Image (cartoon, rainbow over all chains, first blue to last red; front, side, top):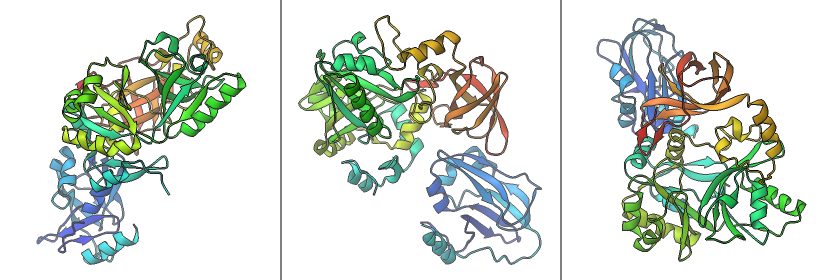
Length: 128
Length: 363
């Protein structure tokens, strides 16, 4: 299972990259794309939309199932990846390159919900 | 413990993602379900369908038994011809859809292939019909046989490369005809809407057959692709388009019913009554117009009342989401309906319940 160590994770299988400007880029993990199978449809949030940590703010649909993508932090949507919406299969090809949306954090800067790569790997193992 | 076919280890060694399919541990895909689907549409793929049940029917009353059991009339099929039809209960509800093959030109020997999920129930039913009517016929399950489906426009070419002797017998077959070659049974049938062959061999020979077909250029394909291929082809899946609560007339299978004057079969009276008053529902296709993915069991709002999708998914050939749906009889092709997706209503166009044939889009 691919698992970049410089990213943060949630136990609902999102990854988070903290950018130098303080924004958070979000996608789904390699484990998630592998479990879902070939992705055929992605629904992204609206730019400007406010989200709370744990809100379902995007949807990825594969050949066999639909899956909500949850906001990892409280924030405001700064940007969405239109290319991924047009080519959902790019998530299967490289889940960590195929970002879904970028958030401007609102409220506290440290988030207890986010896991490091080791904690995420443990969480995946435990739920197998 | 899940049941396994003789090809289980072959699938695992090939990196298949194995899943529980009606109590059988089967390959869902070997890497990409969509890739496998497209390989069948454009070239050739192979499927392990050994979880399905071969049953041989023999005896002096075998022909009469099948004529009574099935909606299709086996008398109207020639030597070595296959017949796709339904097995009904007394109320006209579908117990299973199946293919029966004539064995050469014999009248006391036939081969049937039953769905995996219903095989045990089917055989019990068949035996009870035989004994209730005091017929001299025997239904013998053949669980030791394996079935490999080779499907796609290049199927004949692959077979020629893989097994020239088998190809010499199989390639001249017209669609829906079968033959036998040294213990192998092969039919020009399939569940994908492409050309192809379904090959039945003793289980012990299946790994070598599978290997030879791969070497002949076929791509290994899992049950995920099998489902999207049959959906595009508009073919029914028992448990979705068909179940005991629906008749063939409400499921797009009126064509499988032979209502000839001397063909009495179980469920005929119920079908005649339904035909006389006009079925209330019909099976049609849906093509999603808005964004999203159609799935099975979604509510469909039509100008003539509510319906329900029976199967749905994304069509790799059409690059749009499609579904089969049971809707009120008055719904017309071309009408727009609304389908309740996960979170919203989405518009869909009503089309014929067959989306792709021989690799070409029909809708």
